[in-house]
Length: 454
Image 1: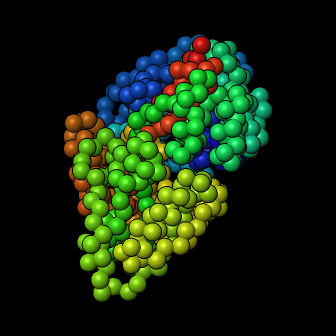
Image 2: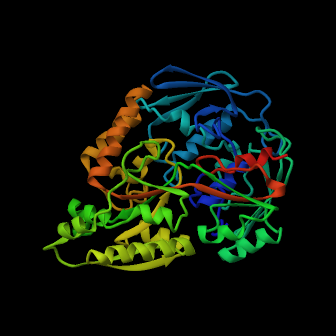
Image 3: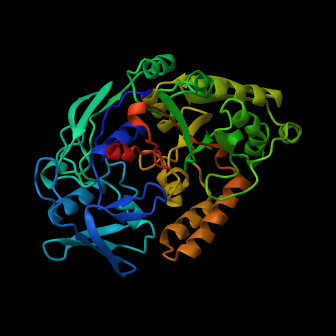
């Protein structure tokens, strides 16, 4: 991994590597299918809607935590009470949840304050032990899990996992070490020397040709559900102008970036939803200059991670924007500092990635006016009543066909008004050794297939 893992506690983890490592240790009532991302029973045996505000979930018999403690209804109730607390990163997700009650010794009933279409997908959230979940969040290595692996060692630079014989997914065959190597060349050398077996989205396209002809390594690309975009700080007067955001978008040559920097392992974006097929945002620097003509000169900061590939692309974006008369200063930061700057609104533009847009409702956390920090991740302080209305409509519509039409309108609105600026959808690129041959990440980037490697 390129960044340190400060926690694998499901209540508070936000960094991508930490999130993915935590899902090897923990599991939810439902799990997302590795190909379709549809919710399927996991720690639950079955589920049934009683009406549009009540969902009954029957627990699977015989499910045990790594310690051997049997899963019961009290664990489920305590877990979702913890997720609703303000300090939880999932608090906004479960805001529509009024209560979780028992229905006998092995079933729970979720009661909603209003119809909430994405509850099934959200029940992928890990279940924790009732006695542990009442303790304050932390690094999380001590939390008992239901997943295929248990933690044997935790440090920010290295998390060690061993197969658990109580894991819901069945007994994994191999131990896993998630190791942080901050230098990209060092990550490539570890693969070449046989000291690493799996690298998911850890090498820039420029390094891949040196690995392609190795008989002991293989490279695969998997279509993902992520989107790379420019976050725009709407508290800056100039950036509140739709015409300025449109000009910035028109100045960016997405096609060249995906063909060259990303070696055709990405697709130019039209909006934020990867499964809505539309013509990508146009590249027209002449039109961009025309929109900016007569306005005060724009001098903007652009935040990005300190990953070498991201910095290179940010510099090219700065060059493209300079070509239409916009001065851009690149500020590359490590993850914690970057997140602090974003949450504090100390930026103009930021090149970010939504890691999983498989469920469109997640956009509300980043775009809805009610979810500015610290409640959510609307770090640009976007305030668009029409956008809010469509997000609310989508999350409350239980009919899948009608929901799809709502989100099609939502994506069209984003393409037109550009509250953020969509850039491209990157494939997940995985390099694996012969020992890990066959491993590919899920479309949302998770590593669940590690547990089933022969």
